[in-house]
Length: 303
Length: 275
Image (cartoon, rainbow over all chains, first blue to last red; front, top):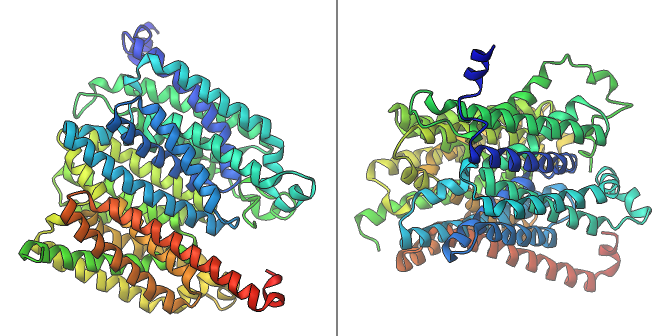
C-alpha cells in the first residue's frame, strides 16, 4: 500500500512549497471560474469569456513592458475591454459576438506591439509563451493574497446577482417587466467575468482559464438540473480536475520524452474536456422530454 | 519597398486579404466569430506537433485545422455552438502546450506562428497561398446561395432541404482550408483581426450581400496594404496596425449607420418608429 501511494504521490509532493501555493490558489480559481462559468454558459457568453482572457494577457504583456506587476495589467485591460464590449455590444447574440470579436482583434494587435517592444528591450521570447500558457509552479507568493481576495470579490458579486442574472438570462423581457435593470446586471456580470478570467489567466494562462470557465460548467449543466446544483457540481469538477492536473504534472517530471515535466495546462484541459465528453455516453433521452423541460444549456438559445 | 522579396509580401498579403474578406463576411453573417478565432489559433498546435515530429508544419496546420472544424461541427450537434467551439479550441491548445513543452527551441517559432512573418515570405510559399486562395474563394462561390440562405434565413433554408449542420460543416472546412495556408504567413491572430474588423464594418455600411462582401474585401485590402507600408516604415508589427485599423473601420461603419438611421428617422418618422 505504501509503495503504491509513493508511486502516485512522488516523494516530496506534500513538502514542496510551490505545490502548496499551486494547490491553494488553484482551488480558489477553480471554484470561482466554475460558478461564474455556469452563468457564462447559460448566457451564451463563452466567446466573451475566452476573449477577456486573451485581452487580459495583452494587459499582462503591457505591464511586463512598463515593469509593474502583471496582475494590474491583466485587471485593467480585462475590465476596460468588458466596459467597451458592453458599450458597443448589441443586445442580440450575433451582434454581441461581432462586438466581442472586434474588441479582441484590436487587443491582439496591441499584444503584438507590446510583445515586439518587450523583446526589443530585453530579448525574452519566453515571455509570450508564459503569458499564453502560464505556469502554476512559478507563482510568487506575494501576489497570492491579492489573487484570492479578488477572486472572492468576483464570486460574491456573481452570487449576489444570481437571481437577477438567471432571470435576465432566461427571459430578458420578463426580467425587465419585473423591474430588473437588465443592462446594468449584464454589465456587472461582464465585470465579474473579466476579474475572474483575468485572475485565472495570471495563474494558468489564457488557454487554461477558458477551459476552467467553460468545461466544468458545461459538463454540470448537462448532468444536473437547477442552477444551484449545477454551480456546486461545476465547482466540484473544476477543483478535482485542477488537483489531479497538478498531481499528474508533478509526477510527470521523469516521464518521457523530455524529462522536464508535462505542463499542468495539458492535464487540466484533458481532464475537463474528457469529463465533458463522458456526458455524451449517456443514452439520448432528451428527444422526448425537450418540450416540457428544456435543457438549461439550451435554455436561452432562442434569445 | 517593391523589391524582389517585398513583391512576395505584396502578393501573399493581397491573397490573404481577399480570402479574409470573403470568409469574414460569412463568419460575421453566421455569427461564427468564435470559430473564426478558434480554428486559426488552434491550428497552431498542429504546427508545433509537426515540427516536433519532423514533418512539414503545413501538414500539421492542415490536420489540426480540419480536426478542429470537425470537432466544432460534431459537438455542436448536441450542445450550444459556443460551448462546442470553446471546448474544441482549449483541447487543441492544451495539446499544443504539451508539444511546445516537449520541444526545446520552439518559443521563437510559436511567436511567429501567432503573429506572422509577413516580411519573410519565401518565393515557393507564394504560389500555394494564391492557389489555395483561389480554391477557397471558388468553394465559397459554388456554395454561395445555399450558404447565404442558411445564414440569413435558417428556417427557409431548412424548408428547401438545405441541412443546417451540413452547411455549418462545409463552411468550417473551407475556413480550415483557408487558415492552414494563411497562418504561417500572417499569423493566427492577424488572420482573425483581418476576418472580423473589415467584414463587420462592411455589414454596417450596407445590407446587400454581394456589395457587403465586395466592400469587406476592399476594406481588408486597404487595411493590409496601409498596414504593410506603415509597418515597413516604422518597423512595428503588422498585426498591431491591422488590429487597430480593423476596429477603427468598424467604429466608423457603426457611426455612419447611426447617422444614416437618424437622418432616415427625421425624413420618415413613421416608417422607422416601429424599429
